[in-house]
Amino acid sequence: MAVAIRSILARCCVLLGAIGIVLTLLAVGQVAAAQQTEDLWKTVQDRGVLRAGAALAPPHVMRDPKTGEYSGAYVDLVKEFGQQVLGVKVEFVDTTWDNIIAGMQAGKWDVALALNRTAKRALSINYSVAPWQYEISFVFNKSNPKIKPDWKSATDFDKDGIVLSVMSGTAQDHTITDQIKHATIMRLPDVDAARLAVSAKRADVSVDDADTNMLFAAVNKDWSATVKPSPSLAKQGVAYGFRKSVPLEQIEAFNIFLEEAVAEGHVANLVQFYVNKVISGGQ
Image (cartoon, rainbow, N blue to C red; front, side, top):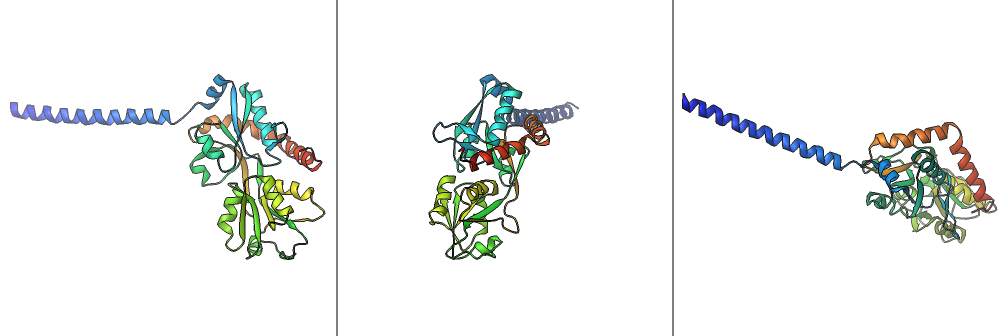
């Protein structure tokens, strides 16, 4: 009998030990999960500043080369949210499209402006809703003998000898890298360099966001022609990006703000204002 009791007690000890291990692992998992989330808005309010990573994308994100001051539709929207909802200042941090995600993940800024929503990016960051839509267009010199007037698709432009100018690291760069097999892709560090390459005839085609290319074409209407490829290239929403550690329920506060701005026509008015400003030579 005593042997049987000792055996039962030993088994109970083993079982209790196993339960203890499981509970410990669960507790560790819960702590790890808690450490992987952040209360961004509280952190921002405690700091008194919302930091926004900004890479150029007119008319959404623009920078005055003389003053360094940022403007644009997505700049104004995040400033309004910071000031009106969070009650904080908004600070813009210079970056490039090659570094805008990495810098945010490293904690150099809290939100990234004017990112294209893609399934691949969504594996590593969280997005807001998209208050504006995006697609790629091509702008070129209508007198360029290498380009035929009936070209309408990306495949038409994908010819040996055609040079496509694009800003490095942008959504349009990633898109044409996947699509283009024969034409040459000239990757340049900023939007001005990419445009200048076409103006100076070092490149044949400016590949850019249709809104940005519309501005380029408008100020060069004497020689420019524009094609929006059919089928469309990268027709996507333009949103704000957050670290994966920022819970979606926190981003929802920003989403509600953006949805109201869209419904009231505020976003469309901002975009039109900055389009007109650039065309008139305001920036």
